[in-house]
Length: 410
Length: 139
Image 1 (cartoon, rainbow over the protein chains, first blue to last red):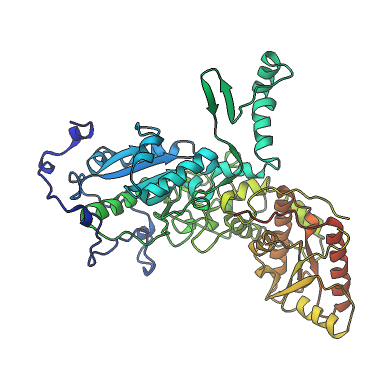
Image 2 (spheres, rainbow over the protein chains, first blue to last red):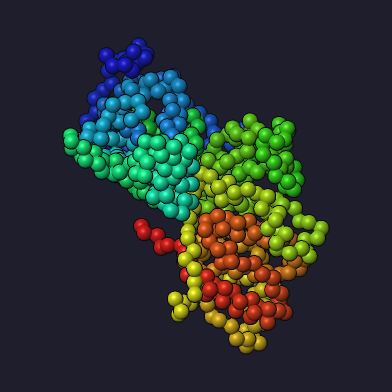
């Protein structure tokens, strides 16, 4: 009796009819794909409430194993913090019955599947691979490619996998991986002292290969730039969010359950699951007035009015440029949007989009016709670290993906 | 390096600067031919994404030309544009670009000569800066 079997409902224990393996994934023609977006493309403004991403109805609990036997599920993290893995557990009690539906063949944070187990599997034998995190080193890349080979569906899960996330800000270190390793192992106060005390003159830094009496030890190679998952492999679905909302996960789960149990067609390839067609402002309940920014505040510097738009209060919010889907959790709590859900569907450059919106909110001055460009630069310089602010989560997907170095001309 | 011919993208607003460029052409004013003009209805139509896209595709410099302040056909378009361009210059500096690679200038419909001077000057600036630091994408 497996761990998950204990949570199985009694009435679900009846045997499911066996289906020929060939028909296991045959898609029923008449079945329709479930709408995954919070609001469909053809939907009119029925109500504001309808704009909110909702939990997909998964029924009480999953009804035992799928007709064709359990599917294989792999969950992998690349350059990620682990928050995405934890967010998968947010499916509450449903996570327990996922064991009925699927064999979790790999989940480094929770299960015992190893690389060699995946390598031993047949191609396309994993139904769904959920990969979170950006691609930052050779191991990430290798595993992403391996899982792509073995999987029918690859889901790019979380902002790091979809847009690079905060790891991609490392692209702005002009010296690349060399400078990063040098700083981390030799320059930070803790490591500098350690190296000085224990390895004076010859700092110990990680090598990709090291020979010890027992044999060779290897470490993955750190790349100079952080890549998004779809820059390395072909990705079927995207779920943005840092971490993705419970609602998005339930929608993915529902699509997979419908596919595995009833043969319902999957949503079209490339779908972003759990996002709306409009920007975050549409989901944000705050009252918008004549938004003009004359002075910028951090959220801790002001008493935030709970009903008024944060931009009206001088707090920079990336809501206008960010796609909806998160139900405006941050702005409801009085924190500005940092843009983790990424750009709206038609836009590639999230940062430029946010910057355009925010720069226009600085009011036209009475003497605007006569002042010089230097004064305008002074005004705009009140935004500290614009690159880091506007591209906090989407550097990996931006048009200019890394720091550049002027070489000088004639 | 001596024979470096920069490639420059010039965004001109329909009402002033494009007419100014036209005037420069009709007046047969001599100027370098390193720039390609893209006509937009207003400088405010120039999304910073356009500039970043131009730079990412290998443009050595980008110049945005519009109506003088208080002269915008759409009343306030150039005020917005100058704020965006100012912010974009800060961002380009953070990327490691020389901010001189992006320039905003006001050229009215009658200022063919100013157009000539601006473009000549800008081409010389970019020539002095050298080719774009953006590397061609490997993949």
